[in-house]
Amino acid sequence: MVMTATESGTSASRSFGPAVALSCRECGERYDLGPRFACDFCFGPLEIAYEFGEVSRESIGRGPNNIWRYAGLLPVPDSVAELPNMNPGLTPLVRADRLAAEVGLRSLHIKDDSANPTHSFKDRVVAMAVEAARTFGFTTLSCSSTGNLAGAVGAAAARAGFRSCVFIPAGLEEGKVVMAAVYGGRLVAIDGNYDDVNRFCSELIGDPAGEDWGFVNVNLRPYYAEGSKTLAYEIAEQLGWRLPEQIIVPIASGSQLTKVDKGFRDLIKVGLVEDRPYKIFGAQATGCSPVAQAWENGHEVVQPVKPDTIAKSLAIGNPADGPYVLDVCNRTGGSVAHVSDAEIVDSIKLLARTEGIFAETAGGVTTGVLRKLVAEGTLDPQAETVVLNTGDGLKTLNAVDAGVTATIKPSLDAFKDAGLL
Image 1 (cartoon, rainbow, N blue to C red):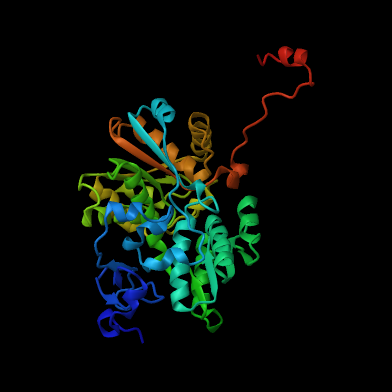
Image 2: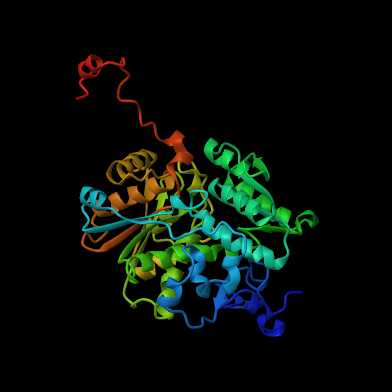
């Protein structure tokens, strides 16, 4: 039996810092902090509820150079930085003047999360899940993954001393498969797409064989998802403790976008930033764009699709947070858009050529949507804008054929004859 937070007292809240309960996003029912993700009454998703103490810019500035500097805003104890973890975060916020000039913006920054330990933003969310798994006594870390998460779980498990077993759809990019396997855990490919993998993992959680397994994006999902808030915290701090006026976020499950919004609202609530308007824009690949299609059609319900895109890290045809993404974009005055595979590739090359950032396909999606929204007049060209790049282009090399300009003999004459001067 799962007790309510009131019935169980405050022991759980001491283990999870300012977090006090799990709260249903639909009906508001509250539960004790534990490894659960759905409401018993309405089956709505659960998320962390907080009672924040005093948090100051000065105390954050004295913290470690990773996500644990924001421990006072996360479901972790103050001592979290002393535990073995991958310690992700504080990735560069790159001023992108050349890209801004190319697309027609006054002020643009790229939040480059390829600088994380396994070269994607997934290190943030997995770090949170690891700390929850320690508290709940799980011995094996697991996940369903489109690639980046598998690598992040494998690395974090190795670092923290957990066993790992991760599940992926067959046919992922080779770089992501190798990265997921190299850490020594078990890697299992499922004959199907991500949604098939996710259904399988839900079945395994209900089987006695999986009772000591912490699935970071299933039974640990409320804690895991909070890691995406650290993107919002870092962006605000790196901008001099202010919120950007516009931000473009890629959509896979949709959780990252909703938690960036939650992070901004946290900062306003505790008084770390001025309460001013901001707009959040979602970005999808055309070949897997159920949220963008719902937005375009004015629907509140997201209709599942079968993914068909090179942006495999975003290829979730039935995004769990899709309806909440629509709510956030509506409330903030943003929107959701999509770009084709050809636009994704072209945008990867544009970002590399103008700013020296080699993004994976998800970064091509956000950059492509940036270009699209500026061209159609949806983005304010004078507003301070941030675009997320969530992974390293070395993971999706097969998506980009850069080509070789010329092969020549090793002589100056051959170089000149090729017209390369």
